Length: 517
Picture 1 (tube, rainbow, N blue to C red):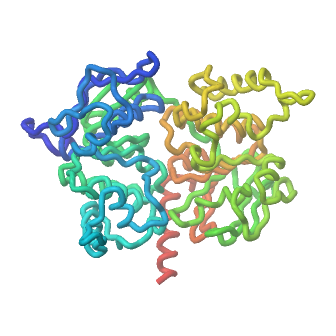
Picture 2 (spheres, helix red, strand yellow; picture 1 turned 45 degrees about the vertical axis):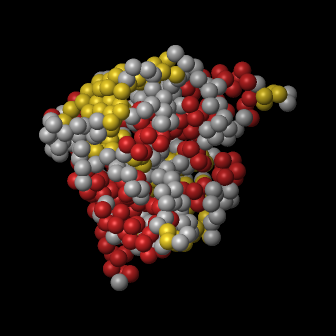
């Protein structure tokens, strides 16, 4: 593609030169130079811990860089450590959590903190809606400004966050920084967001797009840079770098692929894990069965019920009715009963419900069961530490000597390994994994996939609910495609492909829309 703006007389929208950052004497981001032109979409790749987050926090004014470097925004120097100056010069940020208030309307979310149009001390509601509608239209969104954010699709929510960043204040947006904006988006929503960003770039806004998805780089970006271990190892026009070379820069070598070698047939009467007529929220009567050693995938478009299925199965959310059976015995609908029966559940959001970020990694890993460490009324910290170190080694968690560090100090990929490890150490009979590799780099993703395959090889039933179609096609023996709270199709054998999963989900959506009409 190449950058959209090539005029050498035009100052870069963002020019970083010689910026570095150290913490406690350890350099986490080494001096580098990066230029992004107006209207250019520049992808930034890097494994967890590579320095991406540090860079974003320096640009936003959260971290102050080491002395010696400069950051220019449209030719103007950015004072270090000043969030106010970053905003005034035109730097805008959209973070993973978006920072939207679900219960409030779009117009309230867009204008809160930036000021509502007023007259004689009274908010001019019509003017506020017009201003909001213009901001939405500029990024290609045709939405009623009065609609609550909770009613929007994931891509629309992200689009609202982009509109707020770009147009909610009088200062012009020059650089838009997005931190993994599609980490939680289903595949069909990603294209909508990409179109929003192309519209922003067409208006001259430079976009720094942080992502873990290589496909996005080739579909969206003009240029790509890679951070590894705090060093900027390459910057290239996307059209000039092939995928294997990009992966090499990313991981420092070849990435060994992980794939299910032979798919198991669909279970008949040998299903050891059975869910019957499960009803909860959007789920309107789901039946499924899986045999020991099987990896069962679950896919569905936004609103299909996929998002809430595993939490309901585990008992983390309230069921209206239905049964969960393991080896013929009913499991009562509560997390405690599920764990006692041998069922583990990895929630989709590790920062909110998956783990306790303030607790040490060791305590997160051993949290579901401390029984083996109790002796005569005392908890053996030595025994706990020894087992945790063993699991750190098995799962390649880094830093390997950081078992007493708070979980929050680990990269996203290593956090996810800890949270998966807490269930693997219990040798579960059933492993329920909701978005198990969401927001992790390609290296951590490959390691997590290896551990999932190992769990199945040891005889566990593994259920993977994911919006990552490639992940499901890579790992699963079967994939259930959901629609309207029900299982619409059960794909198995040679039908477990990315194309078949996508086709089935879109056929499901089409038939659903037809029925609604």
